[in-house]
Structures are given as structure tokens and as C-alpha cells.
Image 1: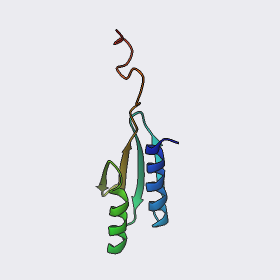
Image 2 (image 1 turned 180 degrees about the vertical axis):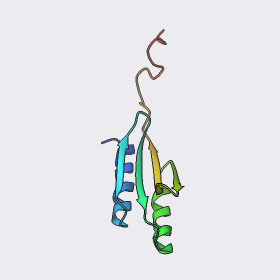
Image 3 (image 1 turned 120 degrees about the horizontal axis):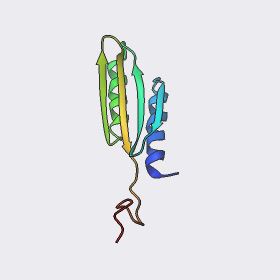
Image 4 (image 1 turned 30 degrees about the horizontal axis):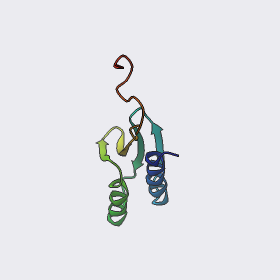
Length: 92
């Protein structure tokens, strides 16, 4: 398992352990972790949640009166260490 995927799964598992249901999605360049945040999350839990998402490459909180609060984190996928990373049409 790539290190980036393991990191994303670890973040999701730690958020789940704090009582948040998580969704993990694979994308081309990153893996995303999302979780709905309950309105009455205690301050101590917020500290723990922030410590967990700080392990990601990026994170944030989307808040809306229509959809509630969604916490998100993104872990960049590893760039190949060998081979032609320039893409098709750029070979010499």
C-alpha cells in the first residue's frame, strides 16, 4: 500500500475513533477524507480533530446553513520516483 494511502486511511480511522463518520475517496492527485461535524461537538473534541487533520497536506471546514458542517482533508498521492513523469508526447 502506498504511504499516502496509508496516511489517508490512518486519518480516517482516527476521525472515526473520535465519533465522526468518514468518507474516503481516491482522486488522481490526492485522497480526500470528509466527515460531517455535529453541531454540538465539544471543545476538547475539536482540539483532537484538528490534531488529526493537521497530519494531512491540506484541510478545511465547509459550513452552510443548508448542508451543515463538513470537515475535509486531502493527502497528496506520491509522485513516481522513476520512469518518464513528463507524460505522453514529451518523450525525446
